[in-house]
Length: 169
Image 1 (cartoon, rainbow, N blue to C red):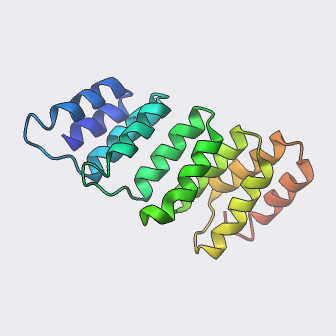
Image 2: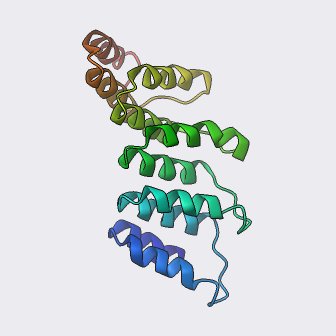
């Protein structure tokens, strides 16, 4: 089932992915974090941020522990839906769920800030990465630069661009 749900995700078929997930109990198959991650990613790709959050909220009852992949997909779903506050709430909730943010999670959260024109928060997140021993990549820097651009902070955007070679990105 996980592979089929993942295939649906890659094909943009979020409805079919959720249908397969709903059929699992009748087939006596227990969904795991890979199954939920694929279903949440399918919702994210389909622009269904509410459904992605619904799936995330169902995981504890299903005795499935969300991980950084789960949170990255849910944060991206919120970002694509213009829900930057919810994206940051999810990011902030990760330690409570014992999920450790990685560069993908940070990039998704910074992108959500960019969509919400929250350049200061985007820069705060970028500055937290070294403290958390997470290395920013091109995607992270681009999201932060875009957030600064949307906020009219062209000088900061140029400063970030000039830091990229030293950061080896």
